[in-house]
Image (cartoon, rainbow, N blue to C red; front, side):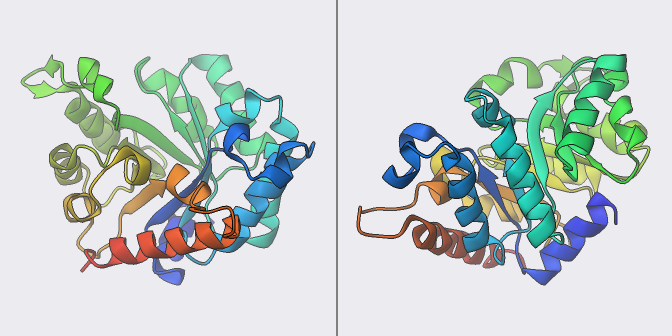
Length: 273
């Protein structure tokens, strides 16, 4: 099954556009995981089990694992998702950007080593930095377009032939680069007007949308700006707000994560119609 087909099925099966980000910060993990050599894995596994019926995708951020030499735990987490929730897409948030043989190795890392259904990539070295990922014709290539950080405007709003660069990227991907039909774009929830512009350019192409939750993006504006005619088309990511949802020491962290994920999924669904 292709990435797009799996994603479409997950939107329907879980009635959800929520992407649960896995960004494990050791300083924020519950106490029982602090001295556990496999604490990151055990924490993420419980988050996955608590939210799997509420999510359309899971998105581990590779830097949180690599910085702690925890790639083995990332491998176990990816294996766990594939074995227990094979119907939910696994997105490797790596934001890789290189060309030729090096890009191919990065693709192998995400697709072959970790078994990801899709990976985020940086397009600013041009199509030959993206094309190697398309050798895996069933896997997703999620390309940075209009990112949620304020500094993104430093480059993404530069004028390119009468339109901002982020719109030029969206047009390139939609009209020229999407050779396998498995491309998607990253567009931040913090800029709903630009999100609407990208949706108008790319039609039904899926959008990975960070920026709600801890980054403050408005759910109503995000959904209304980025949804497709069918009320789908987005993976709206929330990481820290779900992972570290426990308001008091007495509340179980996994149940707290589930509570916030459910509230977020349902808040998104209010505006999908």
